[in-house]
Image (cartoon, rainbow, N blue to C red; front, side):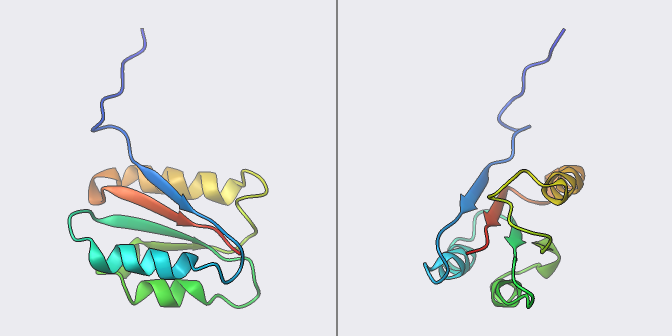
Length: 106
């Protein structure tokens, strides 16, 4: 018999996506700096050879260990194994944060 999930079992995930230069990192930084009710784990999807956005976002975080960089490709194009593994790892730490914010690559 299947058990029903309660809202306490679910983790809200927000995906921030857009073209290069659209302001994704600026929006993520704004959310991290201005809100103080939720502890947010940030997944930063980098596609380029040099990782830039993770450094910019880390400056806005109280706990930099809650910033995870995925640089093996674009998560928008396909469901990648690294995204699945990362979400699986975060599920073990579910009580450490209130939400997940995924910023995709431009």
